[in-house]
Image 1: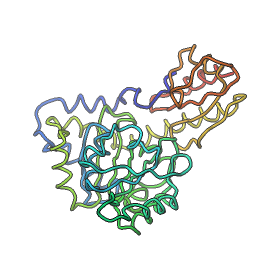
Image 2: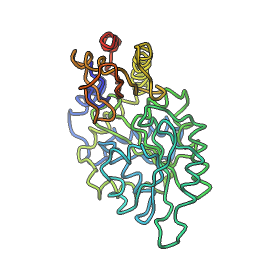
Image 3: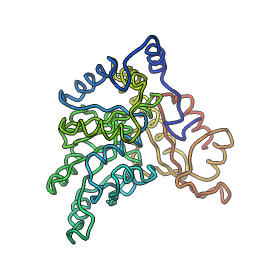
Image 4: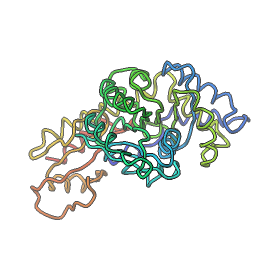
Length: 349
């Protein structure tokens, strides 16, 4: 019963097979291999963006940090939700890669920025001229850190605000596949057609061993992205091992099938928890993460039976009255099974 994160799951068999296959023989290094060229063509086709630049990296942190550095100057700020991943879980990497900069936090329910709050926050920024941090860019996390999903219409509402102030927009799509499946739209509709300039397109959380793609819809920014990747120490010599993962991930819709399975397992888990006496769902279960509060006694029973997940926030204790509810985050992956979910639910009472 492993529900702590989709990061703790292994690598999908198709991805492992692809890595093994590309290991044979020799190929040019640093992205000059034919697999990288094929992946670029695949992503351009999937996103209906024939001129998009594609930069592969190994981690979501650097995908986000490079994206922010590409769109934001050192004296500018990134507008994002206060629960955005770049705020809560990147150890200052965006600010570091920007060479200064700052994150300015915006409110909104269920980890989704409210357009009116975004407008007020942007308008309030930089009013003191050179004495203030300047307006830089907007970053949207989809799926969010609360497991919720922005629809294309919701993305357009935020990018419209950004455009009113002349700001570019980044989308943190570490769980982009989960968001896309949940929204029932095309990759283009969720990104550049909705006003997104740069996407961090995740693979690692959805069955890959370790690969993310920075998809840059404005080709004029492509060369700078290549230079920033190299300068940041994230250009792989044996680049074909990144590209092989992404090629297998995108072949025959594997990325969407893996995400659909994870989402379905989360929906099953969410529905089961909702039936537990004293349980409450804290956020809508749009993608593959469930946030819920249920009695401490149920947590003790589940964890005593070997369930692995996080109390959310972490500083809660299993010691105390059994009927008191404790909040938790439970995340499903491509490898989560129905039996695993049902076994977990059986321990909650």
